[in-house]
Length: 83
Image 1 (tube, helix red, strand yellow):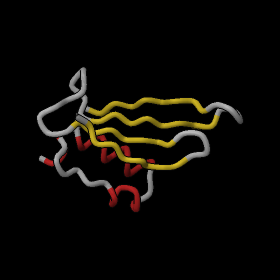
Image 2 (image 1 turned 90 degrees about the vertical axis):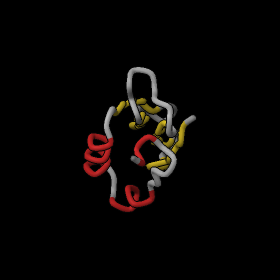
Image 3 (image 1 turned 60 degrees about the vertical axis):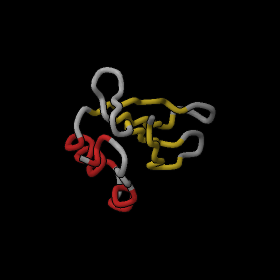
């Protein structure tokens, strides 16, 4: 039902992007959910969940926060964002 991408690998947790497959959508009308982790201490990371309703907003955020190499590797085939 979802396609997952690892955007960056951290020591404890990885920043992941989940995109709904074609014909599906996340509860609340979201097409993508981004889970980012920031360093809290040696044992824990703080989780930030960002939800996007459009491809434009998602790409704008990814362009701002992540390198172009990460963005180029994303393949939106068979997802809601492929349209």
